Length: 236
Image 1 (cartoon, one colour):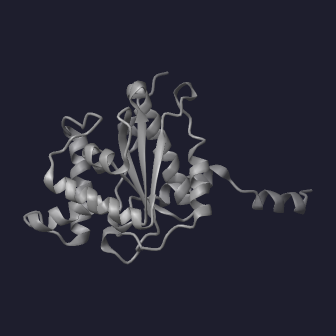
Image 2 (tube, rainbow, N blue to C red):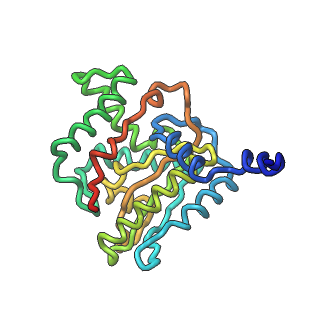
Image 3 (cartoon, rainbow, N blue to C red):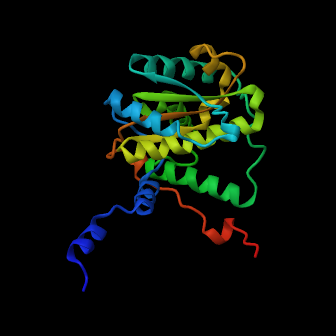
């Protein structure tokens, strides 16, 4: 005979895998934030979870410059001014090209955003204005700027990528929206100057975070993920 108490316990036991799947399914790149700040205790919890990220030889290559409050608006203005008056210059090599399926995915992502916003391909002014939203962090009240140690090279950057992924999932688990922003790294000189970064820190990316403006059309579309058959090769 089945023990009812045991059945109830099984029914109420959390499924960690299902929880993680829900977090990953729900997370998206937020491109319109409410001005409301995230409570400090929530930010601290996100940072503590992200700090558990695995890294090469436990080097923990990442450092985080956390920008909040009035400093966020000041950073955004300085960075926007820099973008409008300087050429791109990144610490890490930018992609040389997007061939084949990579180009297809990139175009689909851009089309989804501009379509949601009602911006035509021919409307260059509107596209430029939307591009510049990257540098005011889509209105987010907080930005985490992620840097790596130059001496750790590629592996340091890879470790930082792992940190970013954990940060995004941790934030999502607490109801905080995020957008990982490689765009900030494309103007690393401006970032370095404003934040006073040391020369041996490589700008990897930024993470804009806060609470999503669910009514904004920029948050109405979602990107798709490739089927496993497209990305996994099995050897048996």
